Amino acid sequence: MVDISAIENSRRRIKEHIEPTPFVCSAVLSEICGVPVNLKLEHHQTTGSFKIRGATNAILRLTEAERARGVIAVSTGNHGRALAHAARAVGSKATICMSKLVPENKVSEIRRLGADVRIIGNTQDEAQEEVDRLVRDNGLVLLPPFDHPDIIAGQGTIGLEIVEAMPDVATILVPISGGGLAAGIAAAVKALRPQTRVIGVSMQRGAAMKASLDAGRPVLVEEVRTLADALGGGIGLDNKLTFAMCQTLLDDFVLLNESEIAAGIRHAYEKEREVIEGSGAVGVGALLASKIAGLHGPVAVLLTGRNIDMELHRRIVCGMNNPLEGEN
Ligand SMILES: *Cc1c(COP(=O)(O)O)cnc(C)c1O
Image (cartoon, rainbow, N blue to C red):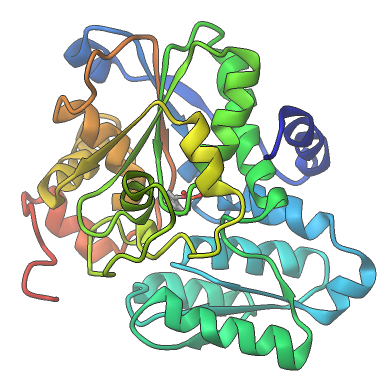
């Protein structure tokens, strides 16, 4: 397991490269929920998501020789963009393998950062096969999106910032896919304040971590289109860290349907004046849908990313609840 000292070291390492993000009170959500609600604005990061923390930490840990070989990962978009950015900053080269499900706006940003982009198959698992081949044949260094100690430690730095800004935080809502973010945050927060509840939030359409926790072991789920596209994909049947950490550290797990995710995006835009992608809006969506049983405040909600296709965003804020319907 990744512990708080690894997370504190990671914070020192990435400090010069990454600004702490704002942590702001939401007057509207506080009123709706009857307890103080603060939003951690991780979508304000340079690459539009928190993933730059873990990617930067992992890249800075590599030796010169490893950086020269180049790095590689599978991605639903945001890790790829973060890794491409962090690799370029140290003069390394990133190769990012993605499935056809990754939205075009995310793919084009990764290309713009100079990465070698490969679109393979219809699922992350198929794209992962290309990653494994390039690691084997070309010696690229694997920096996966969540199941890696340096990635988890980097994402965990958010937990340190939350507890420092809100020492009495009672509940933290964390969007969850592979669980690197939730594992890192929970490891930091539970070490400092064990009574804080850390709750994972995901989509009903293909939440692999939830299915795996229910089964008691990593399982495969069908990958389908969802507004929370960054939360798609499996956790890896040979998961080494995040499954066990989430099993031990998470207090609860809630799932949202597509219109509840859309409501989160719409609320963030209209009431908080923030543009958020579906995956980043599930915490807000969970509060609006009253999905958290016995909610204790103060509450911290992570807004994790903003890399949504703006035409899709427009359709949602104009009132569409399920704009992807019919696309599967
Ligand atoms: C990657 C991502 C998540 C989930 O992070 P995991 O570490 O895979 O659980 C949540 N929101 C956004 C916007 C992401 O890009």
